[in-house]
Length: 367
Ligand SMILES: NC(=O)c1ccc[n+]([C@@H]2O[C@H](COP(=O)([O-])OP(=O)(O)OC[C@H]3O[C@@H](n4cnc5c(N)ncnc54)[C@H](O)[C@@H]3O)[C@@H](O)[C@H]2O)c1
Image (cartoon, rainbow, N blue to C red; front, side, top):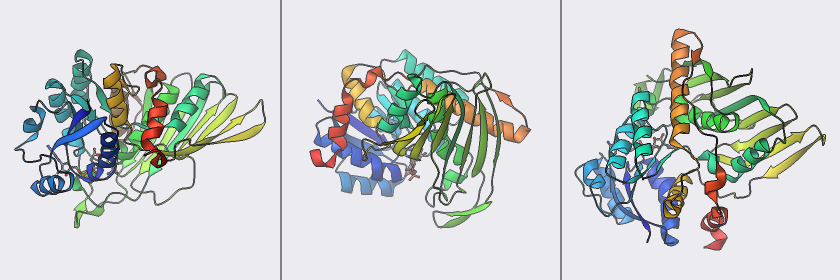
């Protein structure tokens, strides 16, 4: 039986990438979109007309209390994530929540605890550790092909959203929106961060969004330095201040070699690997050019069906949030901040043989 989905937040990511993945999952008999809710009545109406689902609801609770919804996608603006994801878990639903999982650490802790106490799955974006490129790089790091990782560098940015004023208000910002990808990626390779220091600020104080000129009240420019212990460091440059780039998304410098992810960590194009013992670069293309950054949804459906935990763990998302909040505090207070949380190492055994499924689902030639 297909997993029956309800969606909270019918904005840009629902209309674009999530709805197209849902349609492919539906065509494959794996999922079915049942209902959706948005505080914006116009979006409810447009969604009902376009997708033929029930959006005639008077609030999130009306969706969460439905017996014909097995899993809820929380795709709202960021400040709403924590409360809505918690309410969905408490109603016995599987949950996918966009990043960050919450905007306060207290909310995020409640969510992680609720997920641990529940038999439902909580999948927190970003889902980048599921890409074939990331998995293969991770395999090679774990196999010791470049030796222990000593130094890393990551970057992600663009000129910034013109929709959603909330991106520039407290609870939004470039670290939560962009840096979260790099941080999730680097932590997956290096392990938990022990200390952080950062410069985080507003470089462009006025922006236009939703057709209005507004004062920017959340960071749009950040440089973050991470200490993973044993003098192993990495840095992240992110912002709504980056017009274009032609550099690797992630650079990993090991004692015996180098790995460089090409493209973006949410849209990888493969990687390059240097090995001292071979004295040459190897170029490894992404094996699935259609890999979508929404892949956590396919993974959620698959893991729920098989009764196994997901690869991307809520504790990993919690750790990323703690580091981002600490980076902001570090910038405000001009000091290095210690990080308390940790998370389990990525375990790809739950991926099982779904790689084949995954390719069939995303390869347009196979449908
Ligand atoms: N846009 C992107 O490129 C992108 C990419 C990856 C992830 N994300 C994440 O996806 C989420 C949504 O981003 P978006 O670009 O679609 O934003 P958006 O502003 O287009 O959509 C968010 C929607 O949530 C609705 N909403 C707000 N509060 C709500 C509530 N309490 N109940 C129901 N609906 C509510 C808003 O009315 C809006 O329609 C964000 O968390 C963002 O970080 C966005």
